Length: 156
Image (tube, rainbow, N blue to C red; front, top):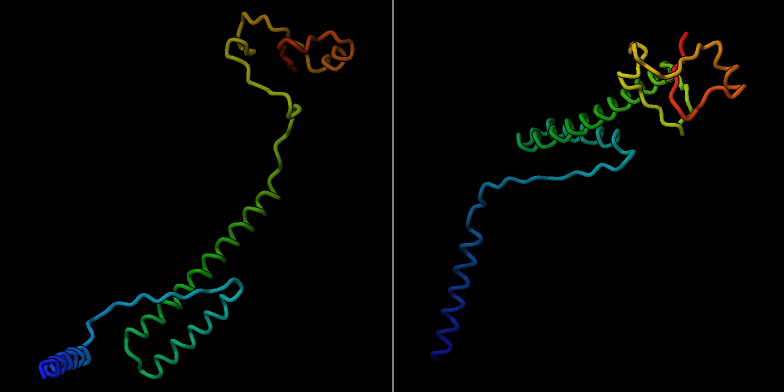
């Protein structure tokens, strides 16, 4: 008899708790929904979101639902605009690179070339570096009169 009263009491407590759980109102909750757009489906996804937004406005849905769909449309449009801007910049850079003349190379890339020190420049009066005229260099190189292991200057 005591066990029966105890079982009825436990059942009554569970029934009361279950009734309280069902009767309570849901609290205000913020949801963050994700959308994934696969490569090559951006235009179709934008069209789908715009159709959903038009449907939501036509059915006078809640402002939060309309805001959710409008935000999705704006994000997809922004992503498409950024991609178009990247393509335009890449095309402009490619066109600019094609139009610009390349730098002139006077030496072999394997040979390191450093600028002369200020003390060895043409303006230095006490410079003991040999100087050769540009017209004579080819002949002197053919005759092996120029020592390529030491610095020299080529002038006009």
